[in-house]
Length: 248
Image (cartoon, rainbow, N blue to C red):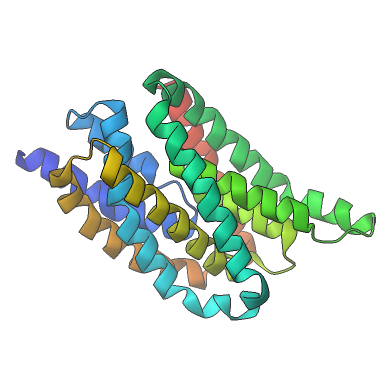
């Protein structure tokens, strides 16, 4: 691997860990970087799934204090995300690469739009007397698991939206739960593609440590953002990333 490719992967890995900790979508940095060094789409995807896992682990560890208030639903949400991740991994390994390439930008933009509309949806549920919706919560977490294992760019946005619709808590506190669900999904995907997918292990050895450092740095930054600022960051990043992929 030449020095330019090495520098590109290191920068993309750190940036991905940072973005995944704050808003999700870090794979929009690492996936194009893997394509740029010559990997085909499917090997790039499975290599990315393995590479970004340390960043999820670092982020979840750094935000573990936010999990205290969610103990009653924690095990169920983790199980639902894991089941969804298995389905997403099967779809990734079985579907043609062309399907993957066509769907990703639309999935990211849809997730971002849903997150932007979440306060309005929550207010309407409350006005009907429904409050936070458990069915929406579990359905959204399942979809997040499927989506995150298929292509984890924007996975955090999907999880945050589901959590905000189903749990009455500020976005900053939900970020810790999102981090755990992202780690669960990332772990299931990593194990599956490590066994069955064409992983480029040299690229993993470069990207993974950079993602881990970025995850720790991003967790500290995300923990200090006010809820409204955090929401704006998520929406802006998701919109920009989805639009960029759609136009390329």
